[in-house]
Length: 346
Image (tube, rainbow, N blue to C red; front, side):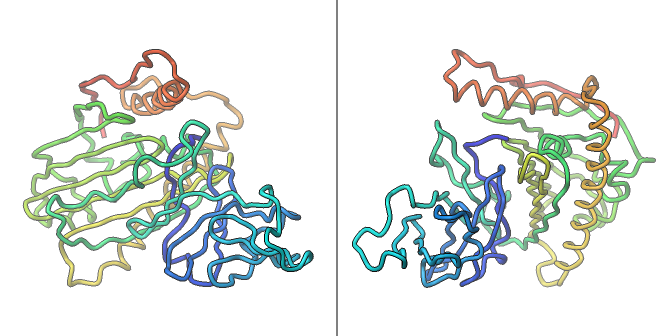
């Protein structure tokens, strides 16, 4: 797992006033809660006294009170009350403070920054769904799905073009309509990008919703660490985008978080249909990746030797590049060429 990045802890709607919310990111148990101004705070989900999860705490104003011995913690993590010793100016030592994590809301998600020794605080805001350049309004829908799969496999699925016509047949691609494609990739600081112009959209119901006549589109696809895939499609005045995030929960579990936005059909209530479609798509990825996890337990290596596997190789090399950069390695080499063309059939 990579530290020094923002990760999605949950949907904003799940964090309700007066209801502490338990989350897990990068093997770190968290408790999220809203203060009186509606701001979300993230703390270590453990009372330092005897270890009771603070997600079971009673929320009192802008503080959490442990249900075991009543120790009370404010959003800064400071313990401000220990009933067993009565009212004193400093009720507990600094060691009794609870660790806190930066938290921000964006696109209907609560993002939490998981720092490391070299990057304890965020230097940039959380990622966001691609929007129109003029900032005009869009409709957006979110969905999540957990999987019993290690995080690297989850990230692989975001950048694996060859699985789409098989795992997502009739959603994004149809197997019988496969054709060879060449994509030009360019380097991003911690990822890569491909832009395609005058692309004829596949004949599936998802792209029919974007353009009934399946007109040519301009598409931009980005991948950046730690595991964020974003796409945007433009057909005339119509614009749609998606941000798909692989979120590490534990060493054995990951979650897919997806947000889709569009600037058309704003007066038509299609949100429910979109959410059901996203649920199906995420379920397809979850099912096949859990099968991969089963197989990987018997065979401990993968054969990443196809041109369509290059993106998975880059991802692993980008992780090393990032780690080397943080460690101060002299002249670390970015693994992605400044410009390169890759081809595959899908």
